[in-house]
Length: 143
Figure: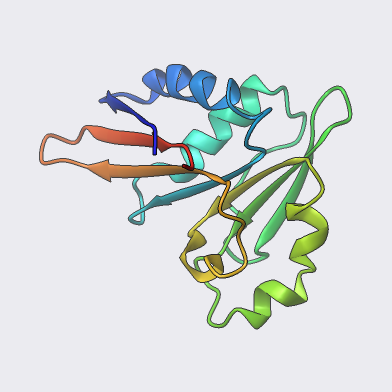
């Protein structure tokens, strides 16, 4: 697995991480984001969407499980949040296949509940906070 690590301390440093992820979207349109609550998953997705020129307001779909956005060029972007999923059937009920296999960008927060349904060729982003309030953001390509 190939990995790239960024260590950032301020929110304005997310741009370089978002740019790196965007450079990989043509190969990996489905990206998972893992990290503890408050680690910055949604903030990073917001920055990616800003750079992709999403014209909608980007918010975490914690209660709806899925938000659909559109870029200025009309390209759909799907943003999932599985934090409140109690069983995989809730993901099945969304009709997840329609989104994940569409070829459009899919950003998935809290992918742990969906590991059995995700293809192995997803890009994984993990975010960890250290004792100095720095974020260690790892971008992990599949084998």
